[in-house]
Image 1 (tube, rainbow, N blue to C red):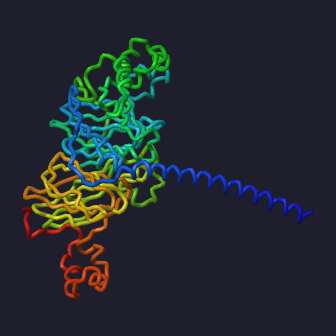
Image 2: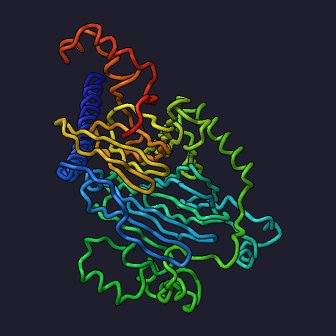
Image 3: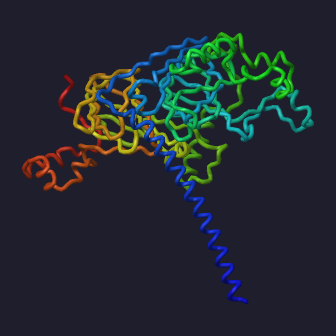
Length: 478
């Protein structure tokens, strides 16, 4: 009896394990097939013979700012699978609440402001000084105070990360123009729609140039015009809205914003009085957050308390520094853990007069370079040894460096500064020259026989540069 019972239990366990293993295999197989399909979709678009400096081709004027969009149908952006947008805010300019169909990284080129991201299900942890403790719950709707989720201050040099489908808004509370450039990773696994840029607005009546894509059919554009509204609420019935919010239909019509001609960056009537800590308090909080992240394994960070921004332009945070050539700073999933789920990272570079960023290739990511200041010359080489780009790039221009293509940058006499968005949460480079280069890592005999050079020449090739990847040049650009 005991033996038969044991045998039955063993058989049952074997059947259960086989079933679980089969299900795991099916899920893994489906995920691999999905990844292969995604790769096939974009690999066919990376057959690039030449690369070009890119300029935005759509400019949309709003009441309190402008929006410029790079054409995502350009070969370089199709290869990288990304969309790039630049916003310019006037004082008291507010970018209306919206969300994207793909993860997004923003870089603050100039100015300062405040930013809010509404994570579903998270509590309203920011409250006004008026307390509710003497009121019944039914009376709280009549309270003049406010409650909302966290509001974050940002400044020049900050990188802000936004997960897919999370609504956000941006407000310029500074005394000068606010400029930010944003990358949306349309080829990211989190985007399950299509490669087209889709921005979903919660308010306003955005122009079809923002809401749609250049590939929209004429019938779809005509339908949008007839509807006379482009935000999410405009497509819902007024009575349904009134019932959902427990409001009257007149207020429901205002949500639909059908006669709003202000665009997507509107001007606030007066300065925002939203509840938020002072700048010094926020910096102290962020410093403590970074200390906590360095102590734990990252699992303790919850969805509601994720840190969304990191300053990458602060010279004190440079990862690589050469006082005669420049500095490089990176933000990745190690110093901003939310990037682990977005699968994006960024690099900020500053080259001094005639400084060189050593020839290298990006091991595991495309690099989308936006020039923030100055100018420089870039050279890019493909797998066949063909020079696909050799030209000067300047402030405001965009250059895509495909994965594994060799690239070298050299600053002009005015210096060169850029932000490079990378399509991997921990993007890596492999230098061709310098102390940490592949050339330095090879034995002399390999170099001698590969390049048909003498031992002395091989040693000069390996050891003449003691810097890592930022090099001082003795030759100016011609």
